[in-house]
Amino acid sequence: MSKRLVCTTSTSCLDYTKHDEDIRTIRIKIDLDGVLLADGTEIKADEFYRRISEDKHLVPKTSQPSIGELLEFFENLSEEGYDEVIVTTISSKLSGTYNGICQCKAMLEEKIRIIPFDTKTVCFNEGCFALEAAKMIRENKTTEEIISKLEHMRANNKIMFAVDNLEYLVKNGRLSGAAGFLGKAFKIKPLLELFDDGTIQAVEKIRSTKKALEGVCDRFLDYTKGHDYYAHIVYTGTGLRDFFVETIKEKLGLENLHEFPCSPVVGCHVGGEAIGIGIFLKD
Image (spheres, rainbow, N blue to C red):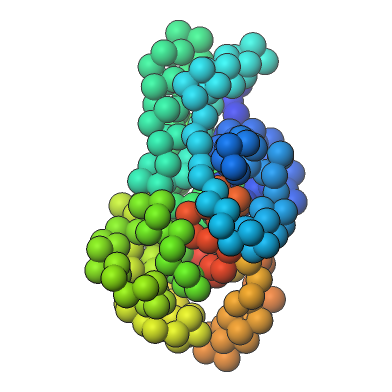
């Protein structure tokens, strides 16, 4: 029987939750004023959001791992005796990391079998894929069974969120169809979703962040109607938290949802005041 392992990217939020699974993490880097810091180890969420809150002129950027770094990462796993690695990644539309892993797959095929899986999502939604794959490995499920399950999860999950400031999304080119919002001095507070193709798109133009968060709840009800589901909160800064938690309680009847800070890499894209809800349909 092959020795198998699950890996994920640092945008999965697994640095911020306790679990017992054996999952390795590929670290995307943050560029802060020319200093490269590994996401989740050299800089964590609380420090990152504090820094961008205190310095409004700071424009953080992301830097995906080089092919050389990725090759070394997988070669080390091969030397540890692993001959198959399932890698669940951040959406390929939000980062080039998935494509880099695909290159490594071809270059190292004689040493180790690399199976890149584009989750087409991010944050703890992404992390759920890695946790499920690791659990299934423990249960001795076949690789085919694992990939089939991950494909089902990919077709049945969503992240809906709002941001207080569009500046980060527009500057970093992570908002599809952003042209419709330019020229409005970023006063629009759109309701945003991660779409099935892995892109972030605005689904409704709203001029109040609070109204946008109420809209998140409305779309949540539409998406989950008639389904059993799992839901959690994802956030960058905490300025919108209290209102959103209260809104979820009033409009959805949900309390005590697990909350996960978005990694600094995600914060580079959406800024320090974003909050939303991640959903998986169970049926």
